Length: 357
Image 1 (cartoon, rainbow, N blue to C red):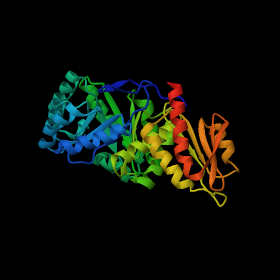
Image 2 (image 1 turned 180 degrees about the horizontal axis):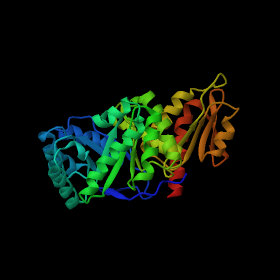
Image 3 (image 1 turned 90 degrees about the vertical axis):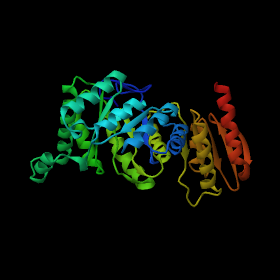
Image 4 (image 1 turned 45 degrees about the horizontal axis):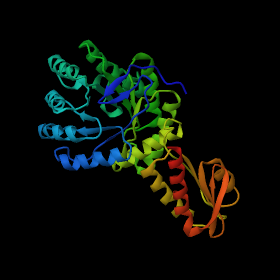
């Protein structure tokens, strides 16, 4: 996988594009006017290894609250602003590390110039974000007339916003092109990629619930990752932000972009399984999420594939009838009764992590 060459920008301390590691983003769903509730959610996302957080700024009260949020947040904060340039200025004054703002939607050029000047002064980037549902009436008419596919219209719309910022001498830009349809999203990013040097924020918008949305996002982001068109991502779910972070990290991990994170191998279970593998795997996964050791861990349920997979992992178990075998680096450590397996595996992971320090 060769990633697209892009300009690198900084969102707070987090580099985006230019070959930097791909940051995982999420967005709070609390009322931004409640700083404590919002900060609690940001803390939870940070604990889940989120890299960047976004907060909605729908009014002046939310913009004022952003000052307390930005000052205490463990993550760089992006202010999500629409239509009112004064909210963008207030968010920048409050310490926002990034703006999500479409310059074509905030009115007269003087307003755009004011926002750009304030962003430049603070070295704050702006994300131009185009959704399939927010195409301009002019482009929508061309789509309806059959002159332009939706994906190309999305790319054209993004270019319009980018050119406005460039016309003000601003180039600290990243771009997103999101649709709820996977193929449209992929086509939009492909269409824009050769036409701008800026990093891409990727995702499938309005993807769905935690289960269906994660699958849909993995399908779309998987293609974009393989084609090198992702510089940062958000998995947009109708679910708590922590679930978005987990899904985003798992997608990156599947494509080898998180080498310093755990990898869990667990078998799908079948009629040969003779231990409560679902319970054991769930407990081990919860432990790994919290601990996040850079290890491959296998939780296998029977004697067919179990021993081989467990041997290929750094550490693992393979179950039998009411008992199982603990492996480490391809060697049998010992045999354990079923009720001992979970803790035995955790203890072995801890020992291996200690030795690797």
